[in-house]
Amino acid sequence: MAIVSSGSKKPSSYNLNGKTRLLDPKRLEEETKKRKDDSLRPQSWNDFVGQSELKEVLSISVKASLSRKEALDHVLLYGPPGLGKTTMALVLARELGVKCRITSAPALERPRDIIGLLLNLKPHELLFVDEIHRLSKVAQELLYPALEDFRLDLTVGKGATARTREIDLPRFTLIGATTSPALISSPLRDRFGITHRLNFYQLDDLQKIIQRAADLLGLRLSTEGSMEIARRCRGTPRIANRLLRRVRDFATVEDRIQVVDKDIVNKSLKLHQVDECGLDQTDRRLLSFIIEAHDSGPVGLETIAAALGEESLTLETVVEPFLLQIGFLKRTPRGRIVTSAAIDHLNFDRSTRISS
Image (tube, rainbow, N blue to C red):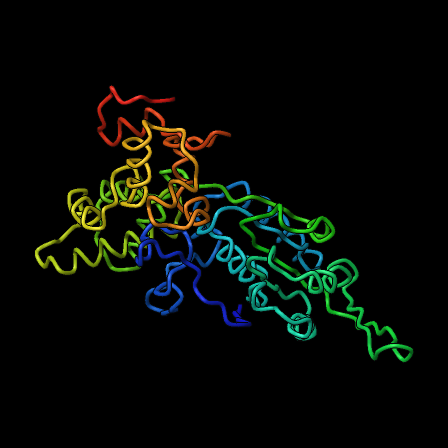
């Protein structure tokens, strides 16, 4: 199985107060530098931990495709960033024994970009398009006949001399990945034979992922230490691997450390201001502001953004989702409200007015 990358995909991460968040689920620059001795990506079904329902569905489809010697149905994977959509595409390619051509929708700005990709595909190959919801309208319309009938409908010439030309394509598999499935047009979404959501990972699965990554990195990590990282990584393997690298840095500097245990993990992540619930300084600033300045809310998003010196879109898409997921924050028509669970976690006085 070979990997072919198309286009220039820059790491997408948000800077909060001039700093890149350690807990940002987006890919960071250090993680885009591929090193053969430091790759933590699973290479097979056995290595891929978690997402059992998705693995079962795809493994059946893969076996059926191989037995019929046909291309796999088109696959749409959606869910929060960092859960393994790209990794799943690479594992699928390896299981099918074909190439996986990787690109992203922002890199396909002109029609000729996607036409060139489709014309260079070989039979049964995989084409992985990240952030597929950002494809232009023209690119989506080119994909309609390509996905359904495996052909390209091109218009040659202009005006009275214009004519339509059909180009047959080999039967291939498109794997689309998105964090916003609602932004994909219905005609494009309906052409995917397999559509599945990737969910956040359970603690047991995260611990296995972290322990496997520690072994690959040559780090002796105790069971308690791996569980402590699992608790703080927001249910996201990408964040778990990032925290593990920071723990490894700390352990490397401390020469006397033989086995990285829970205490070492605590000391390391405390330096990065990541607490036992996976909150960082930005999360705590947002919650503390609402509690102290607005009696736990409600308060509008724009007011919070202005007070913290952040963009409202950044707070809404990067900071708030995890706080909502763990029940520390509520969104109401009147504004944001901090719950009693968050007040207890931050050790604020219980006499502070709360809404839970």
